Image (cartoon, rainbow, N blue to C red; front, side, top):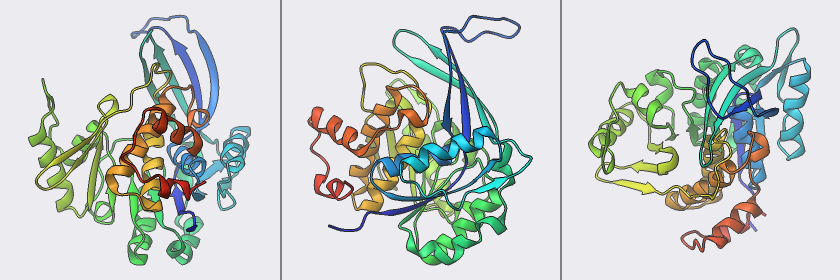
Length: 332
């Protein structure tokens, strides 16, 4: 059996405080909520945990405060086997918090999130310097935008020099500099993020997204050095944009959508594991779609992320055969 893929995630830890309601209140109005709970999350930590639950050997680098939330945020990934021994703990600074309002109706759930970065924004180059010496031991590096950009830029440079592919999930949406984009192997924006990165529109037609817009956005990103452009489309799945074609990977539907929080992180984590394990890109995307489908059927961020066994069970339940199960079996 081949070795399990080694994945390094550099990113955020965020404690989600979640209020569930049947109606998002407009300005100046108060409504009654249905439930309140807390769940550990953060884009980086979510992706690290998802990778670990799918069988990868994962190291997570980030920063928490020396508060109760900081302790809680490290417990869940550590219990799943994520190496959090390098995570920085800063005194006198609050850990990151995500304020989530979840509007739940009979068939759908929509979220609105405000992130208070806290300790995530205090991570320093000195604290991640160890990565430069060890980066070549990893098969994939995952980055997002909830830690300082200079951290992402440095880690991406070291990865590029070592020939290690970089997966950048450009969220929360912001305009990135060309230097960072030139170091990215896989860029996974959603529709809004793709449009913001390129200052180009992404319009909708009765048949779906405007494919000419998709091609222009991808061309703009390729011109900056991005090798692979994969645009996530929520309930419409994802699109891989090539020079002459667009390949769509359909969304995997579930009977009930409980909470879309962490669906994107689940997708990116699974995509990274699939690629690092040796799946072809289209197979890795389908693996990711099945993984994210389970995530949206559950509440919370980290609590919703499925195990490899659960994903394989769903793929077989749906009689999905277009994947090399022998590659996925090496992750067990």
